[in-house]
Amino acid sequence: MGAYHAGSLAVQELMGVRDRADHVGRSLGQDIKPVAAAFLELQPLLIAGAADPATGRVWASALTGTPGFVRATGPRQMSVVSGPSPADPLTTALTTPGTHLGTIALDPRTRRRMRLNGRLRPTAGGFAVEADQVFSNCPKYIQRRESYETVPDRTPDSPRRLTELGPVQREFIQAADTFFLATVHPGGADVSHRGGNPGFVQVTSPRELTWPDYPGNAMFLTLGNLRTDPRAGLLLLDWTTGTTLQLTGEAHTEFTGGGIRTVRFTLAEALWAPAALPLRWSAPEYSPANPDIAR
Image (cartoon, rainbow, N blue to C red; front, side):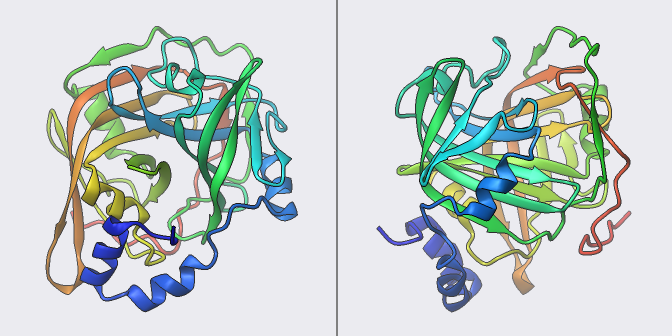
């Protein structure tokens, strides 16, 4: 199998970047190199994405732990000694052998990110992932946060399931400078990062969001997945309070002239979890790559 499936190839053709994508695609491998293994061991946060085996809905979830909770345990294996909360919609997927899982470790301190996608194997107290794809992305659109602390006495509120976004959730989304996007295709799953200045995600109705798809690495893994399977999961988090908002539904890309792309997401279900994560990060320094937001 090549680096790309038919969906990504089709979007690359549409955007006229096939040659560039072939060049960039050489960075996709299965091995966790020593520099990547060292990076993983420093992270207190890992984002995972998959389809729930019971419902078929795609979700993205945040896993946290003391650095070292995620680490390379073989040349093509990553192990995680933590799992989601029992109420998390990915709990079933993360305990089901053979689940296609996408993961991303993003470090706001260094503006580095690494993606590892593969098949899941449950372990005592966590899971391992046998890697199919391992690669790093550039720092574009990552907001720098120079430090974090763990808040041991933070008590999560009970999460609430929603079928539409209320005023609190709409305000939360429109203040976001970062979110994570889980997508799937017949041979796997993937989680990507999306960043921009606050306001880059727009809530257009209680069940619909839009965001611009900014120029990236030309691989079009995410948009390629959505072309073949529109199911998607979004994770937004408050880097100060630890509140998370998980959304699942379908996303479609609108291509207009001049290479401009807009993604339109329709909500099926959401999970609002105040104070869910024990991390508190410092204030952001916005990426110089972020486009200005039209007001």
